[in-house]
Amino acid sequence: MSAALAPRDRLRLLGLLTPAYLWLTVAIFLPLSAMLFFSLLSDVPFGDAPWHVTADNYLAFFQTTTYAKLLWKSIKLGLMVTLACVLVGYPCAYVLAKTIRGRAREALFLLVILPFWSNSLVRIFSWAIVLRGNGVLEVGLNAILPFEVDVNLMFSTPAIVIGLVHSYLPYVILTSYLALQAIDDSLIDAARSMGAGKLTILRRIVLPLSLPGLVAGAVLVFVPVVGSFMEPRILGGRVGTYYGTVIEDQFVAVFNWPLGAALSFILLAVVLLILAVTSPVLRRAQA
Amino acid sequence: MTRTMFHATAMALAVAGSTAGADEIRVLNWQGYGTDADWAVAAFTQATGHTVVHEYFNSEQEMLTKLRTNPGAYDVVLINAAFTPQAQAEGLIGPIDTAKIANLADVPADLTGNADLNAGGALHGVPWTWGLTSFAVNTTAFDTLPTSIEVFWDPAHAGKVSIRDDALEAIQFAAIATGQDINDIADLDAVRDKLAALMPQIRTYWGSENDWNQFMAAGDLDVATFWSGSASRSMESGLPVQFIVPEEGAIGWLDGLSIPASSTRTDAAHAFIDWMIDPEFYVRWAAEGAPASANAKAAAALPEDAFNKRVLGDPEVVARVQFQRPVPDETREAYLALWQELKAAQ
Image (cartoon, rainbow over all chains, first blue to last red; front, top):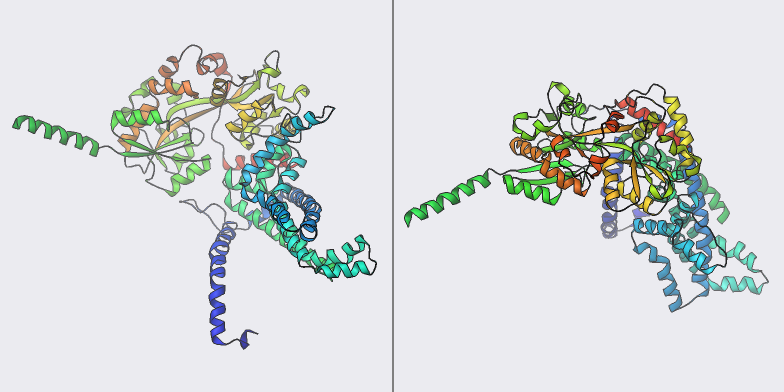
């Protein structure tokens, strides 16, 4: 197709694409290459410390069961959070796209995007205040309920899931909303006129047509959650050790950048593998 | 008239001359750790004319890396005695000219003679402060204060216990609980078992002094490992906590001030270190919450009820302390692997 383009069009195309690709090269490709290089070194190449190229950092992953165990734990966390985001976010997106109109929709949208406007660390610390024993949640519930409840979710896996779902829910809502809105209402009307029930419409029309948006949202949630480290560390307490926190430790606490970088690339590889395996399945479901 | 003019000019010249001899020294330290107190820096500048600029590190490894990568950038650096031999062996720090530090005469010989600070056969770090890593309890949770480290394993405090998320500290803590030498742990399996038994008791790990204070204030914890200097600050701020040195012993550390081999302003650096171990500086710092001073005269100048005199001034307590020696890289890595394995099993 590009062969058919006139030289002037080609120039214009180049002008439009160059800034983005230049930015990608500088902001993503270069640092990532530097990290890839680091991951193959025996020591951080600062100062006079001797170093050589080695695969030891990658082998370290297989020498103990610790890393594999934590990676599996992180993947499970990613699945849990993604599922929760989909279950909460998709119906919300449906209502926003198909039921509510006008000013109310704008106001609700604002509420959805609101978490993005605050710093993620602030969000997590405010959750810590809410979830803590004798915290806002417990005091609030006891003020309303006629019986005493003991809510102390802080430093547990549910606390981590709650914090992460709150942080990443908007992705699922936004991507699903765009896909749902693109569905022509007359399609749904036609199905209804032919006697299709609500569930059938959802299963045969709405879900398949909005699946690309839903999947995009799920991927946007799953990938960062698998590597998350701040939320588990702050909200998880004793159970908050995940693959991401171990990588963070390598960079921050023990200053072993090569191992941290190698662990990161293993994570990247595993995530890519998961996406590669699941994408044909999803494409078939869509067809 | 002309005479007065001449005098004024001469004086102005003299003043200009003295400021021209004033240096700007760069200090590398943990943030908020004594050297960067505004009043201390101001007093030093007023007394000597030298100005002080600070840079900070977040781990000993980072400190060493900064020294390696920025030769000439620093004039005074805080190095924990367990790291002084490594810094000396790498040629990062130079020997101290003891003649230039008058207050050194008041530092007891067992500290100035510390084997690690005297790496390479000469004093490479001026003993500055020392302290303990032991634990503190929430006094509202105890009728009688515990005297044994076994309180961490007491089922009565299950889910109300915390230790710091640090491999070396966790393993040395368990070494003390199993009656071993922290610098030469013979039975690492006993340490592993002891820590594995501790894990279910733990509510969360703490990372910083700020974390610790928050968890204690919120009532999340009954007992948690803590540093003596931080404990004195927490008690000072009104938290109902008490620092305990159990009968099993405690981990001791010693911090020294060193001068990088690449420093070009060594006179000013020596003068700053001299001020840092001055009793006048220490008494004021201790009032804000400081670790114990290496200077005996400074320690003696504290009021009777001061934490560092009451708790750390007791020779019986000091006798129970095991001071940290350098840890070889392989040992450190083995400890880290063990600690990560224990954490991952949760």
